[in-house]
Length: 619
Image (cartoon, rainbow, N blue to C red; front, side):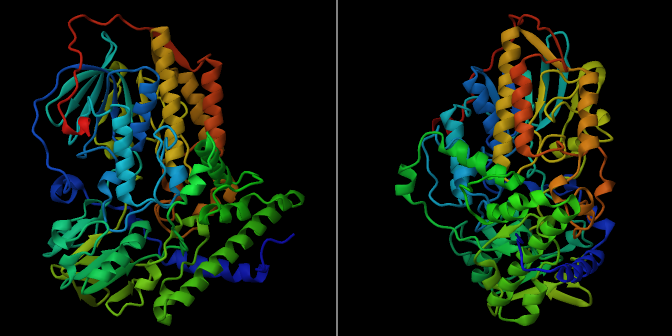
């Protein structure tokens, strides 16, 4: 009945090694990030020119903040529910969200495209590969926008600067940085988890005299090439990459092929398992029966939730591990402590395979050892790639292992690690996105609800919501919850966004049918907040103690998960349980947790929105 050949004595040794590696990386200062407001050049759009336009003063039915998959799915489901005037406001130059910004070479999704890309059946599209590259994902986002006519009222290169509820008209006043001041009866904020780029607060970062950019603002004018062709501008350049997370794992191989010299600065190595991407078998695609994507997507989520599923429809690096780790029938005869130990042994064997693969691929023993991750598999988001490890066999590539310190200092000429300075022509920051700052800081604007209540003040000690979707005092206002806003998180982010978007669309349609304004009661909100805060914890992994023992990083607040506001948690159950809870709640139609009051009749003098003149509408 055993899952693994690892023994308890091996577990003791692994725990000691993991603890030692964790302790040398503990550093609260790692939570400090740069203020981007004074560094506009690092965040400006390098891909699309800003088109001039006149400010708008009109009215829409629903305003959606964000044009990534969350905003697109919210708008698409609203359109299907009969809502006509939907306006997406997006700070990028087109739809796509993170896939608009992440145009770095080698960008791809780590979740199977057949379950990740939404509405494949509805749009009659089959992805070209099992794991889609960035350009195909961006094209699919644009396909969604065209299919549901979402370009008609969309505003690009536009950032919301404030929302204010107007009680008399029962509308939200929306202001933007382009001088717009329009009204919306409903607002959906689909900010996403990968929007606010994160720049580490490294000493001297502003002093560097060469080229410096974040991976989500890739400078092809400097590097040459494009996302799938050689970076011809780097043939005589010394390039440094700071970061070894999921993005770095994807960019290292293209950079290694093009740069004269590449230095990869590592604080903590990632797990890098086999990706084994391949082109779609269209004979298989033609055999799919209606409803195939929904079944496949729900199966993937169930397996990665640790639910007991008899069939794994996806069978990739994600599901094979989670199925072995979390859903074994053999656990039924064990007590909780024995189950936890068995899972830890399974985890150890999996990590040993990952570490052994590094020895097989990387020829230099010292480099191979430095690339080995010593922590439990789920302490960091796993990576899958087939070219990352071989890149370190190239003579022009050097791994700079900082022994857990990370890069502390940048000089005008390069990066300093200890007493060694590495001269560089270009520094690329593969440092990810800010998911830990206060919500209002990340979305970039405050929201003023009833009686002058602001979201920043209400949430100063953490989110207060009903289901992670609505918040008391902010009527007709919805959130598509990213991590830690009391919603849920799943391996497949698009599944979470789609389920939540459908929920919002159903609610808006019901409120319209009843002719009401919807707000959350304080009692209903307080009950839900108690539910999530008292029940939070990664139960499948052994509770909150699991994160405390993990290597420091974003997921555990640099080794201090208790340092986050207590309310910054997700729904205390699997994402499947969360989706079921939402569905059952809305189907009951009782809405005891809501205050529903009659909506005023529309004022005849209000200017109704007309389609925005934008060439993307006709694409």
